[in-house]
Amino acid sequence: MELTEAIRQRRSTREYSKEPIDKQYIIDMIECARLAPSAANRQPWYFVVLENEKKNKVAQIMQAQLNATTHVLDSKDSATHAYNATSSVKGSIQVIEQTPILILVFRERKEDWLEGDYLSIGCAVEHMCLKATELGLGTLWIRDVVYTRDKIAEAIGYNTMELVTGLAVGKSIEYPYERHKKGLDEIMTWL
Image 1 (cartoon, rainbow, N blue to C red):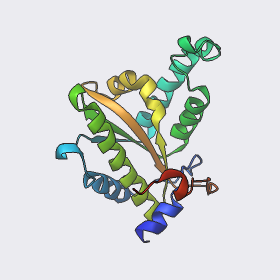
Image 2 (tube, rainbow, N blue to C red):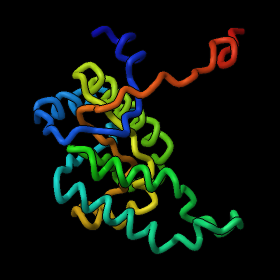
Image 3 (cartoon, rainbow, N blue to C red):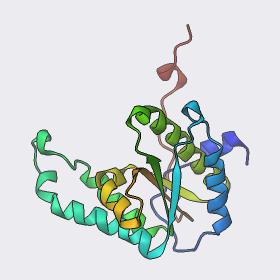
Image 4 (tube, rainbow, N blue to C red):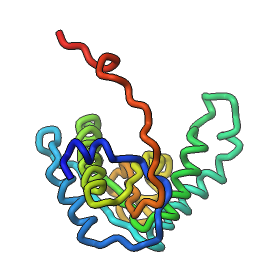
């Protein structure tokens, strides 16, 4: 598959089969992430691949936080909306429980590199998503782990690092429709 075709076919997948994923596919995806550009070539990423009980523990931590903050979530006062992504968190929990693989992406805790590291990690995750598409796998980039990042990091033994994001990986049992994308005339000016 050519790169442009992988870009066109990539979708956010929310329904996965329980079929196990070949370990080499995950290694190939992380190899692509490793080759991503990064600010000052810092390569700030560290990947932890979770399956089975370890993966489900992440969903349990997120669910416990969601249960504990339901009264805040239902509040109309945006100032008290600390955990403000009810619908996306619920969906992310369901995906994590369903998918065979969850890749967590961590970074060293260096505040002076925060923005550069986040941008670099974003590029690395996109490399993984495109490789997964080429391999015939579905992915969902999961931001919602940030709401419980410290508890998740502690539970899996990486509490000295900052959890940045997660990526669900599996065989898709859906083919999400193509979402509307803005046209070039809406997103670009050439001066």
